[in-house]
Structures are given as structure tokens and as C-alpha cells.
Length: 268
Ligand code: C5P
Image (cartoon, rainbow, N blue to C red):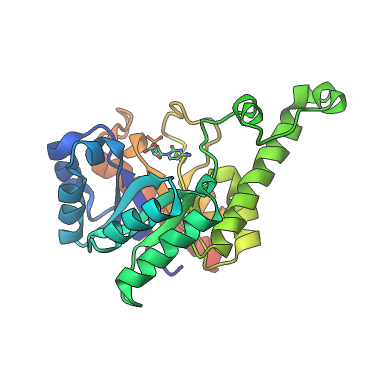
């Protein structure tokens, strides 16, 4: 994707309310091309206001809808989102299955008729899922004695979860989705399997100067771009920067510089 550095930054408008979200868009529009509206704004019925405001500033809104239902219902919701000019991207759960993902694709295509359409992204596996939960749900097999014997099964679990994420990403691509949300450690394998046009949107991004907070497997913005991410979802490092950084604008500018540097290294 031929994106400028600032177009690759998606600011997560988490816990800001309506006024805080609009102020954040005003403050950060020169440094970020996309603003993510999530369940908080959606359930307060403020998401459309925020999305339209971002669109008015020449930014995109990522509607973090995480759709997951029967194909007909998801198709209807996707059609509604596709009819909103301010929605630049939205997401569905890959676990909804191939018929559901295809229904979302078809609905968007029918509404947009080859014109500008929102990107549909697949959520593969939420990073909050660990092996125990995936096993409980029957999505991963039991660990063998041998696997347990080596590092308590840690590396076998990494391989299994990575394999499941990759499988879901390939399925999403085959169902016509435009891309997936993936944690930093899965970027390379998805890029390799799904090709250069498939969008990879990556949360869990932390500059060297930022706290990891509750994110477990982080990469710096430069590393994530070098690994093949198109977009980086960033919340707290920009919204609550450490005191030594000083301001949200400064934090965003530092991240922007890091992305630009990674891009120029890749081109040279
Ligand atoms: O503050 P932070 O940079 O950790 O915010 C990351 C954003 O990305 C949050 O909105 C979070 O919900 C979202 N996200 C994530 N991990 C996922 C999917 C989404 O952190 N696997």
C-alpha cells in the first residue's frame, strides 16, 4: 500500500467520550490519518458524529464494529456501514466463518458499486485469548507430554496459535476481505502468505519510550512497519504519553518520524 507515514497511524479513541474524541481529532489530524471508534462511542450512539467529524478533517474513521452473527444479519450491518461515507474501514470476526465474511463483502460491493468502499478487516484471534481458553473452546488440541516437557509447552503454543491466526487470515483473504488485524508477531507470516495488497493492521505497538501497559507482545512502530504492517493502531502511547515526552502532539510526531525512517530504510 502506498500510504504516507501519517496515514498509517490509527489513533484509538478509547475512553475519551464525545468531546474528548473531537478534541483529539482536532489536535492530532496532522499526525494521524485514521481514528478508531469502538464500542464505547458506538453504544453511546456517538460513533457516527465522531466518524463524520474525522471525515470532515480529511481523516478516515475505523469503525471497530467486530461484527459476528449469521451471514444475513452481518450483511445488513455491513451494508449500513458501507452507506456511511465517513466509514473508511470496519471489521468482522473471522470466527464468524466464510459465509459470514462473504456476506459482508457482497453487501459492501452492492452498496458501493465499484466506487469508494470501506476496507473490511478480519479480526483473527483476540490477543486476550490464551492457550487455555482456545483449548476450552476446542480450537486447539491438548499439549503432548513432549511439548509440556520442553519449556512447559510455551513454544508449541506459540506455533499453534500462530498457525491458527495464519489460517484465519488466509480464509479472510479467500472470502474477499481487504485485510486483517494482527498482533506484531504475526505480521511477517501473514504478509508472506497473503501478499502485498492484503492490509495488515497492527495493535500492540510501543515506541521505546512508552510503557507496555497491558500489551504483552509489543513491537516498536519502526519494527512493525519493517515487518510489513500497513497501519498501526496506537492508543495510550499517544493519548497518555510519559512525562518526559510532554505532549500528545510530541508523541505522535516522534512516532511519525519513526515510521518515516522505517519506510525510507525499506525503500533504500
Ligand atoms: O492503548 P493501546 O495502544 O494499547 O491501544 C490499542 C488499541 O488496539 C485498543 O483500542 C485495543 O482495544 C485495540 N486492540 C488491541 N489488541 C487487539 C485488538 C485490538 O490492543 N488484538
